[in-house]
Length: 178
Ligand code: AMP
Image (cartoon, rainbow, N blue to C red; front, side, top):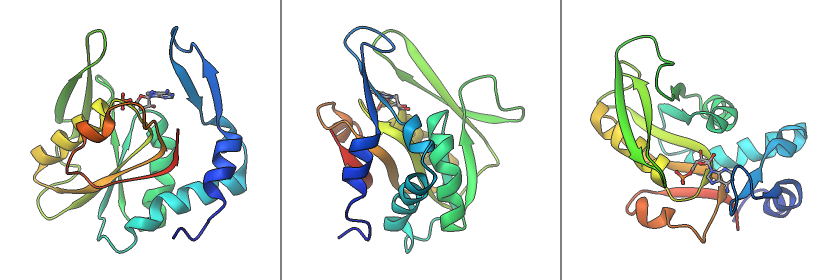
């Protein structure tokens, strides 16, 4: 049982759905109103961190770009290192790179090779789990570092999209389901 039983309802009331953005047919979940409400934003990042408090998390991987907004406070709640997982061309030093398929084309995520390694326990954070392609790329990235992935946490579960299949066998925790 969540220690914040009204959080899901408050998030549902606050997150806005924007039809046909960024392209026709997409119902975009706009989390910026959550950021505009300091108390709700704090409750959100507290609840994202809560299931992992005893999971021995040493590193929080924040996925560019909205994952940065939630990942940084979660790292602080957990007393863990913060690792930005970035789009190509942003990280200045030696990197690990993982590409993944989009509906049209591919996308790529990177982390610094020295960001984490064997013996570390990682938690990855994003705002939305949709197809799961982004998070699955992070699963592969963490595997290549030699670290253990404890799981993935996100604010929003788009349950009508196939992220559960893409992340089979990975512990996932989300706060609100559509
Ligand atoms: P996916 O790789 O399909 O699971 O998509 C996850 C990424 O795309 C996340 O980083 C989200 O920020 C973004 N995303 C996918 N679908 C939506 C949506 N309906 N509303 C807002 N963001 C989305």
